[in-house]
Length: 399
Image (cartoon, rainbow, N blue to C red):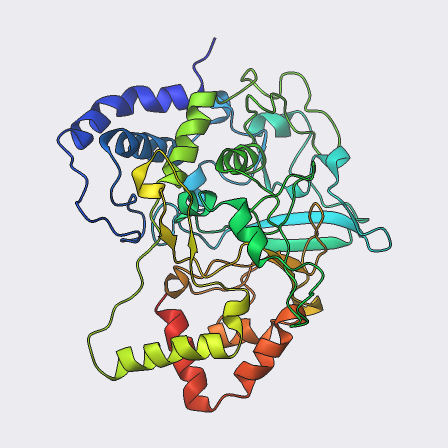
């Protein structure tokens, strides 16, 4: 039996990890944020070791003999998460498609076609069997070409109790402020917080989904190959037995992401620029951006001290909001094409493309595309004096 993909990586990495974590001491007063790609300050030796092992799996180039494909978008996790470091984003776009049935409020994720993620690459072996990359079916009326999300700080996001998020939810807009907000759900109705539609409840589920649909790995929870536009993978087109990655590999990947720190805000010396950023932060609240982009939430208790009872400056309520037809994309479980989970704004200053599909090249353009529940905030931004708009944008660039 061939060794699993994660075992091949971990055998070579073990001695290196042992040397790196030996003698490490957690700082006495850890902060939450740090340089992009670094682990959370305050991790113990065991967590640091798992972070480094997980990073080795995350950056490993897979082959089809180890389980890659036969349909895939990338050959390693870091291919879509490399800018500015591992765990970031990239210019790679992924094709998503589904069928939206507005009368029923139902999203058909095309499970009979292999799901709503349409892979752009196929292994040579699959192509020799006469099958190639998937094609989006013509009946798919809900489509998007999306950028990979940044993964920084997701362990802190996972640690925020669902009860805290529910406090911000107002699905019936009972206070009449035009902002509703509700938790996204997966296909079973379980509340989530990851994914653009808030449809993924846990980091393990997030990793499992990415492995299956981006790298084409079968997993212990899904030990089968996804069909190619509904046609099963032919016998002999997939050399690795199922599952192609084991629980240990998935758990290490999840821990790598769990222990990634959010990037620290840009700091300025006392003077006009710092004063401008501070004024922009006030304006951010005054025009209503913070109604959805909640500046900070708090994690619950955790056995990992670096994740326990921590203020999380994510600038998101992690809820679904309807942003209007201009930002319509693909639908999701329990979510219309116009509904999106509020984006986290930490690390915004590291990006050059904005919104889920990268269609905005500037922050001003990104704000201008907000409609629906954000229309009043957009109008308030547009009504600011030119200098005040610049101050607000400068604040966003500091995140």
